[in-house]
Image 1 (cartoon, rainbow, N blue to C red):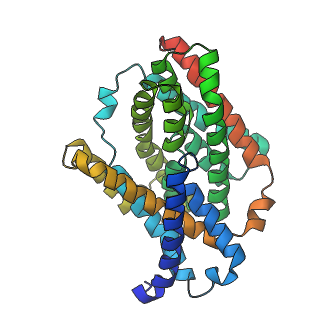
Image 2: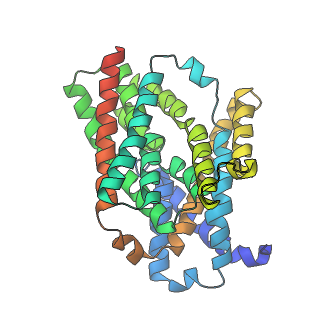
Image 3: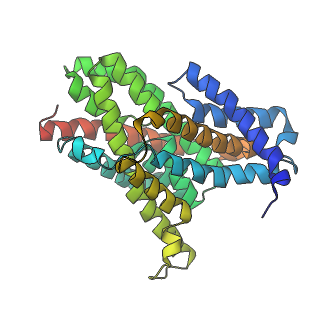
Length: 332
C-alpha cells in the first residue's frame, strides 16, 4: 500500500481541481461540479503534462478508486429508505418502468451500435438512475477504463442540458400540471442539479415534487450495484455459478447500505444533510478530477460518435416512456 507522502501530490492536485470545479458548479449548477471536475482535469493534464507524471500517479489512482468509493458511502447518508413508502405508490410504477426501459434499451441498442460493454452499462445506469452519481457507483464495481467513464459522463451531461432547455416548454405544450411535470422531470432527467433547474423553472410545486421523486429514484443504485457486482465477480471467475459473498458485497457497498440504514432510522439528523450533500459532491468531484487528469483525449476520440448516439436514443426512450407510463397510471 502506498504511503501518505507518496499519495499526497496526486491527492492535492485532484483536490485542488475539485475545489475549483465546486466553485464553478456553484456558479453554473446546471452543469454541476462533477462535470466541471472531469473537464478541468482533462484541461490541466493537457496544459501541464507533468500533472500526470510519476509523482502524482499513485495519488490520482487512489482518488479515482478509493475516494470514489468513499463518495458513494457518503451518498448513502442522504438516502432515506422510508421515503420510498412516503412518496406514494403512484410514482413507483413510472420510476421502475423507466429504469427497466433505460437498462434494456441500453443493452439492445449498445449491441446494435457495437459500443463497448462498459460504456453501454454506464450510459444505461446513468440515464436510468441519477447521472454522475450512478456512473460513479457502477464504476466502483465494474472497474471500467477511465475513458469509458469520461465518455459516459459527457454523454449524460449533454442530454441533461437539452432536458433543462426542452422539458419546460414541452410540458407547457402538453398542458401538464405541476405534479405531473415534477414526476416527468424526476424520472427522465438525470443529475439532481438538472432536475432542480428544469422543475423549479416550471413552477414552485413542480420543484419539490421532482426532487422527492429523484431522491427515491436514486435509491435504485442499491439493487443495480449489487447485480453489477455479482455479474462482474462471476465474469472474473470464468462464469462460475458460486461467487464469494465478499465479491458481491465489497466493503464500500456494505458501508453504503449501513449509511442509508442510519439515515432511514433517523440517526443522521436533517440538519446534517446540507453538509453531507456538499461532502459527497466534493468527493465525487475529486474522484472525477483524478480520472480527468489521467485521461488521454485521443482514447476518448477513438470511441467515435456511437456512445453519444446510444445515450441520445436511450434518453429519448426514457423520456417518452415516462410520459406513456404516467398516462397509463393516471398521473399525467
